[in-house]
Image (cartoon, rainbow, N blue to C red; front, side):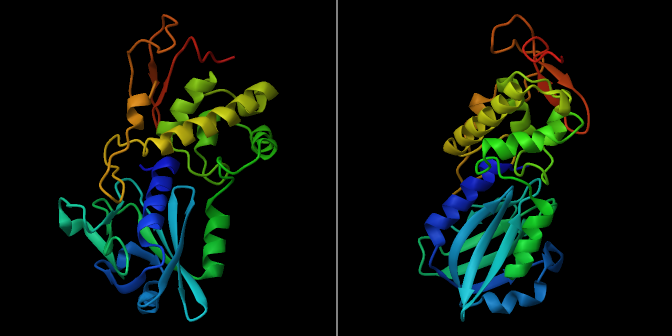
Length: 276
């Protein structure tokens, strides 16, 4: 599933190529792919794309028309992609929506999603605010260290599930949670309320470093992710533990990477990430 770095790459590419362009057509091939605002589709014709933002793992495109602003929010889900028309697409029957533009470097943005776990939402300003408020906690690239550590300190339970809880910290999924915890030297099952202040602060800095580095690499194309221009993210070359069960610990501590099975597998070093 695309996580924060991949969503940020998508938002930046759309922003660079299509901001200021006008919508000539909004085509939706499956009504069930639009979870909210399906009947608002005609409004977007002749609207101008004003801005593109990321909320957690979602991309929100703001359109202006007649003094009003409305939004198209794309959730990518497990296999969803937003792709420009210049990109050759395998299995085009899984293109479920198209935005056709005038005046841009690209002419079309396509929503491709074979498994349909993601969706689109057409929202007004109030709808967007409600959507963000209900679904997303602090953005790890924008939150202050004081707010981040306070959110961690007030919680209970295991650390890795907390990192992936979107209503607490938005945008982190399984890949980056594993990488962050290894670099921070914290066990995935560490009890959140027992973390030392120094551990919480280290977790904050490592989280921001890993996510920033991943964005600079275009994200992690582990299975299905491609950027709108068809590019693959290269950060998977820098993964230290994710998917590396049985391989030597990259810290050369003498241990091997283990896998904790569960709803989402955890990869960790039993020596560098001792559970205290």
